[in-house]
Amino acid sequence: MGSQTSKKTMSFVGAAVVMLWLKTYMVYKTSFAITGDNVLQEIILFINPLAFLLFVFGSSTFLTRKPAVRFILALSFILSAILYANIVFYRFFNDFITFPVLFQASNMSDLGSSVTELVSLADILYFLDFIVLCLIACFRPEFIRLKIYSSNDRKWFFTVSAGILFLNIGLAEVQRPQLLTRTFDREILIKNIGTYNYHLYDAFLQTRSTAQRAMADGSELTGIENYIRSNKAEPDGKLFGAAKGKNLIVISMESTQGFVINKKINGKEITPFLNDFIKESFYFDNLYHQTGQGKTSDAEFLVENSLYPLGRGAVFFTNPQNTYHATPGILAGNGYYTAAMHANNKSFWNRDIMYKSMGYNRYYHLMDYHVTPENSIGWGLKDRDFFNQSLTYINQMPRPFYAKLLTLTNHFPFVLDREDKLVDEFNSSSKTLNRYFPTVRYTDEALKHFIQGLKEEGVYDDTVIVLYGDHYGISENHNEAMEQYLGIKITPFEAVKLQKVPVIIHVPGEKGKTISTVSGQVDLKPTILHLLGIETEGLEFGNDLLSPDKKDFAVLRSGNFVTRDYVYTKGTCYSKKTGEPVEQKACKPYEEKADLELLYSDKIIYGDLLRFFGNKGSTVKK
Image 1 (cartoon, rainbow, N blue to C red):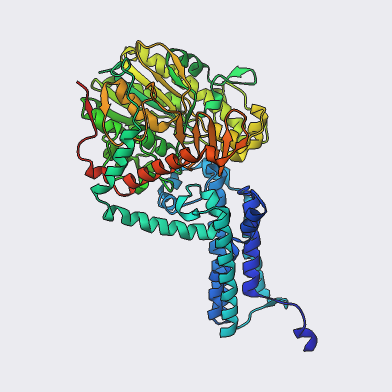
Image 2 (cartoon, rainbow, N blue to C red):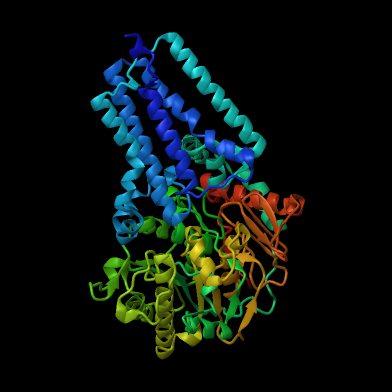
């Protein structure tokens, strides 16, 4: 008996905590590729899952043996599933799941090949600790104890847990002051408070945001209006109304990033049509996407409303019934027929509801298109067939019209039929990047034929055409392959620069011009309306891209921002001239501006403040 009791053993609850703790830390370092900026940050990263795990698994100490084992097994599986869900989500979005994203689960049925591309059989290893615990529960090896805990045991257990929690919070506050009040970057939260505590914090934010609309009143608009008015850039006197009465076509180019423009792959141009089209259009080569978790729908929201998307989830899902002063509603009020065109399920991203809130007269969706296995691939109808069928509808629209079209083919996982490949795949370790170039090239060719169709139908010369990249196609998970293609080291500084998306505005009668002012998608609404001769008097955070007074500034949804001289990312201020870090004080004024704009925009959305703004959206300038 003496020799038996002297053997070193571990409690079942302790084994569960240790295995999940170490697994979480390994996921940080591998699947999430999180690095500590210094020794203190690495210590925080290592300990931050522990306090949560001790508290939740410690609840089992109040149970008898069998219920305790079942509780621990169930908890181990649930937490492993939450961790794994974040891993899969991170593989494409380079981000972490939020509660609003979970409410978008209806999208999952449409993801198809995108999901299968992100999971593999080897992922069962992420549940290895749960499997081990099940084996222990079945076979009860001598080195694991299934003990009953006394009240003193529990006091000691939770005292240690609380001590680790306070240590974590204290170190996090030293590392990142005002962490929970001024941080827009979810990775910073994960690095400092851990995945599981982050989800608790996210649940708190969800509860708070739900209450904000009920408590909001119009008094909150005063400060926001004053800020917007003081930062407004007046439109260019010569270009205001340059396209008054013209039709408007806006095309969202799925996953198209700026780095493909005027570039080649295997000796062939990636975007030969766009390269030519920008020569006879306004081309903005220093414009950044500002999307969050809503991706394409966030880009639509930015372009139509000149408000920022939310930091969590997609506005299209979280606030579709809000009052908006969006471009389609404004144009409809100025005599335009407005239509959105997208060959996907009408409810995907909740578009059937959100489009009504934004003022569209008509939504042409999947049921309006002839889709067959032969003319579709990946996410649905091929772009060329989509444009051909959409052109028929456009020809039937009353004049003037506003038509927004969303492409699909250049969507992750970037698959394409052999006969549609006009360039060869790239050769790198990333299959995603390799396949990306042929699908971009396909969309470019589809755009060429669409523009030609507009010319043949006599629409082109009477229409403003806006093309914009909606969001990144290649995430930071593929940096190694991107380094191979670009021939540069992708630092955090370079990673931000890769968030540029092409924006091209073709105005009949106007000469082509490249404009390099730092800007974002939020600037498109006032630019378009001013070209059409419509004065903006609403709550827009963007400024006219063609205004001589437009400031060089773009804030990303993460809180990162870009100015004429600096790039701010991951808590570091970089000089654009050298690409090297500089003193934080250089970025401080812009950091306050970035935080304020995101805060004000969030207030407008969460509080549905535009319902108090009356009918002051926009008016035709006489």
